[in-house]
Image (cartoon, rainbow, N blue to C red):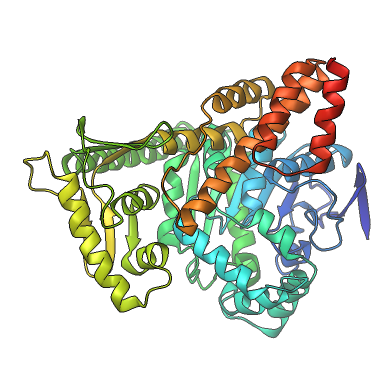
Amino acid sequence: MNWIKIGEVNIHYEWIKSKDPHAEETLILINGAGLDMYSWDFIIPYFLKNYHVMRYDLRGHGYSDEGKEKRDITLLAEDLHYLISKLHIKNCHVIAQGLGGFIGIEIASHNQNKIKSLVLMGVPLHYPKRLGSKIVKYRRQLVEGQNSMLRMGQEVIKTACYPPTKEKNKRLLHAYKKVSPTIYFELFHTGFGEQGIKNLQKLNIQILILSGSEDKVFPPELTSASLNFNPNARFFTVPNAAFMIQMDQPQLTADWIHGFIEKINSKEKSESQQYEQKYQRDLTTEVYSEIRQMLHNNHQQTSSKILQVNLMSGFKVLVNGQPILEGWGKRKAKPLLIYLLFHPSVTRDELCDVLWPDTDIKNARNRLRVSLHHLKKTLEANSKETMSIIQSDREHVYLQCTVESDLLSHLQAIREAHNESYHPEKIKQYKKLLMAMTENPLPGLYEDWFLKLRENIERDWAEMALFLADVYEEQKHFNHAVHSIQLALQYLENEELTKRLHDLKTIES
């Protein structure tokens, strides 16, 4: 076994020499969340015919240490960058599966001179947040009170491979058994998609996207939508394969990847080949551009109403610029509308769970029906149009309008600031966001869902304040550091933080 030490963390890796004595290029293999580097065992013999291979275990996976730092895509990409540098790998192609795809995109976006191409296998670049949250919740329930992801793995293996076999299941379960729930759920969520897509759009290298024909979690018809994000991307569906493409179709997948790389390495391209490549790129760009324009036009036709809901400086609702002043104190109109702001399409049962958690489902559904009728009438008070902002059927409720909200904009700005990698810009954005803090961003809302949302918002404010406190203290601006810690202490009860504040005040005085 081989390890490279990064700080205090030992990263387990393997570099395997190609069977081809003239091989110059290395394939870097990145596994998905919960898995380890042995998930590539089935396909590596086919790769070695033409390439060297480097595979490794992510932090907290397989035989790699977990470390003390919180694991995220940036940190994991930094680990890989260190490995590439220490192993003196120059000409390489990155092949990533599942969550590993986001690491591959991140590392490629900063190393386009070294990384010649990127292959993404079963990578859900854009996954619906509401559905993703439900999957995360279900998987958390499976491993509640457990010290590994084995119990969840026993469920996942039923659909991860096509068909599942004893050998495949053994490899997967061995990996899940070594990963703790804490580490797994730091990485398994939909929060990486937005930044991943931004980085993917910047890539100027060739990209191959693969999806298994039998993948039930993120089927190929949805994966192919990723072509929207980069005109250099190509998409293939691997037959008779599920999520673990490299296990189900190792030889075919390796052959396709080899063919993809050979085309990239073809140094002398004829005029017809250059024309064909340009034609394919232009066709992809223009087709998806026109599809997006058609969808946009359709959205404009069906969403002529603008619903504006402000919360951070007091509750205020406007429809097409006209304020709606009455009706908010009845029939749970206010919490119902605000929940729909965050969930523009939602099931009736979910609304019942949020607004009437202690009421049996029959009575809750009756109350919801009355509340929806009241909210529709309230929003249409000043309107002569027949189309309602709130649409519903037997199972679903959804908004049909353009939505604007100061709180939604604020939360989006927080996400963008958290993802900002340029340190001075992050500081600037955090300062601006903290200036927008209010005493209560969700006034008059006491249902559990809203209380939890408020808690999350306040935790974000506290984290930003502490980040700035560190910056100010390092710059010896102790008065600003004191102010930032005082902001954080509004939302955190922490003895160490209180002591730090006392120490800073002493230094300041």
